[in-house]
Amino acid sequence: MICREIILKNFRNIEDEKVTFGDGVNVLCGFNAQGKTNILEGIYYFALGKSFRGASDRELIFHGRDNAEISLDFTDMTRERHHSVNLSVKEKKMCRKEGIKVSKLSEFIGIFRAVLFSPEVLSCVKDGPAERRSFLDVAISQIYPAYMASLINYRKLLQNRNAVLKDSENRNCDELLYVLSCQMAEEAERIARYRDEYTSMLASETNALIKEISLGKESVSMKYRTGKSREEYLKLLTENTEKEKILKTTLYGVHKDDLEIKLSGYDSRIYASQGQQRSIALSMKLAEGEISKKICGEYPVFLLDDIFSELDDIRKDYILSGLGNRQVIITCCEKIIKGNIYGISGGKISKQSIQQ
Ligand SMILES: Nc1ncnc2c1ncn2[C@@H]1O[C@H](COP(=O)(O)OP(=O)(O)OP(=O)(O)O)[C@@H](O)[C@H]1O
Ligand SMILES: [Mg+2]
Image (cartoon, rainbow, N blue to C red; front, side, top):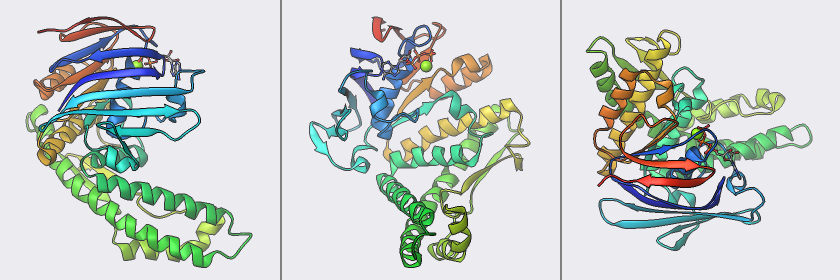
């Protein structure tokens, strides 16, 4: 998959710019706060359907403007594609595939696929369960759109159930809570099954990479923890309702599950050094690309946001060699990497030098 061109209009600090990318390594280079990550955020929006930095759609619109527009030209195995998104202060966003409006986000994502390496991802191994769940959710949504639909539905049900629990002092809501619990347990089982299967693939790909960089000395194993059947989720939800009414929140479900990662048999959160944790996280990202290729037939686009400043030379080489001659779009402050170079300054592309 190749990202050919992105056009950003009133997106973050970019008023109107077009960036054309080459097939190999592309480097967005510039001082701090110029708009480098904003460009990656625009590209990754087409893979994720939202900002990867947790910003709302509104926050992505250039301050003081009413609308923003991003459009992406890319090619996959079959053809040239053109996707676009309109963001508005007043209305819901509008996503288009080949100019045709798409009403469901789960129909929009999964066509343009990308893997993002960011400093946050580097610490996903040592951080809490939410970061690891997010890793799985982002990776699985891109290859299985049905997973994303389940996740969206589950989140809505969870929100409703929490709202009912908050109001439980004022009205009898046992029946409603039971209905919501049944619906949640059904989606939970589906989500847990996807996560469990994905974890097996992720573990075997990551282990192969870790073995390679540690010259066979280390190994990684993973387990999707606490994934359950529909009946088991339902039992937990119905048996703990009284406790949940007091705490006013849903205590059990896939929003509490974790991905356990072990390095040479020991919990990597506690046992692995900082460097080892980063190597595992980097390998997991490379593994995400491998799985995407195995299932969808071609490599996704690799986006690297500002991670080179945090890595030693060995790990830099490891990533760049791991990415071989795939399309990579990198942001950094210095011109340390060879490739097509783009200067970014004040939200403008100041120069482009594309290698032939
Ligand atoms: N909605 C918005 N409207 C206008 N400007 C914005 C908006 N959102 C963010 N910005 C500005 O965009 C600028 C560039 O942000 P960006 O994160 O892309 O920087 P960067 O080039 O990646 O810098 P760094 O090297 O520090 O990571 C920031 O100064 C920020 O204040
Ligand atoms: Mg940045």
